[in-house]
Amino acid sequence: MKAFLLRHGIAEDGADDFNRNLSLEGRQEIKKLARFVNHHFKLTVVEIIHSGLIRAKQTADIFAEEIKPVKGVYEGRALDPMADPNVWAKKLSGSGHDIMLVGHNPHLTRLAAILTSKNDEQEIIKIKKGSLICLQPNNDDGWSILWTLYPGLIK
Image 1 (cartoon, rainbow, N blue to C red):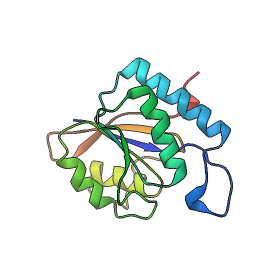
Image 2 (tube, rainbow, N blue to C red):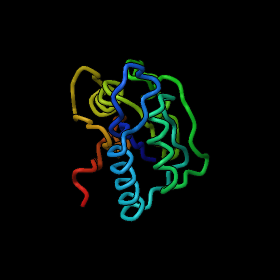
Image 3 (tube, rainbow, N blue to C red):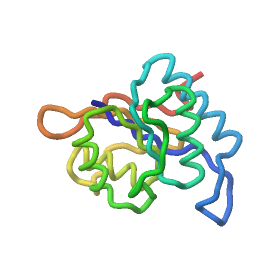
Image 4 (cartoon, helix red, strand yellow):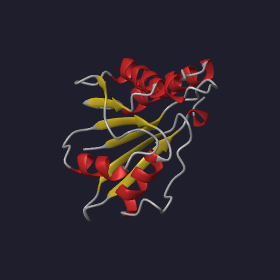
């Protein structure tokens, strides 16, 4: 079982945070990342769950076009920027299948910290916009980061 944490791509500016779309650059970067990941890693993600904010949904939909999750893409609770990351830490531990969460900071950064160090205040990794992190449970009831990618690494 693996967990993939994907931060949404670059969004357009705007005062209405909920309704900000991905920018053209954000769409292009996410498409590039999704194609690269599909070609090189052949992910077997069962479901992609996003926060419900437009930019996260658009990011999830672009990834779904490439990796074709079995259960599709849908909105989940407790993925907004200020949500309690412990909710998803528990859900991921009991999931049993590969899952991708598409969301925001500081939530994703805190979730990665809880999974890897059990401390959401200890910043383990910086998650840039459009970044994807692959985590896997390890033998000591924690998680390890297997790899991370962001569009700037891909030609």
